[in-house]
Image 1: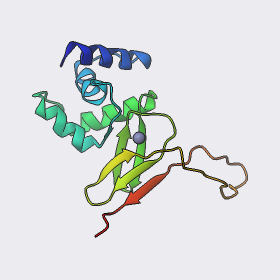
Image 2 (image 1 turned 30 degrees about the vertical axis):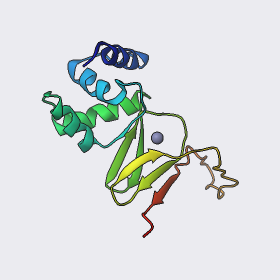
Image 3 (image 1 turned 60 degrees about the vertical axis):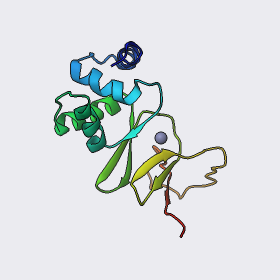
Length: 139
Ligand SMILES: [Zn+2]
């Protein structure tokens, strides 16, 4: 981990007042160490952390990602029922999902317009609207 990555990871955890444990720092540096936003699955991040030589179980990776979401550092994007992506960018924004390779990326939001939404049942309000645009290759 470079000194910059360590510093970014510490300040990122610090924003949410999360204690910088070794495992949290290892995962945070893979997520935000280079200052870029990132979309990961628990499995993908687990592979990446094993690649650095750290021993962290998949369950720990998953629980840590959930803790980062609960702390407001990340948001979860569910693409289909059994696959969650975790996004370091937490503002509302649309996504492209590439069906062939299972990659999730940010979509440009400038041209996106949601003009109206269906009426919600009595006693409810819209908490969030997720926009995932699924793409497949033209052939
Ligand atoms: Zn995103």
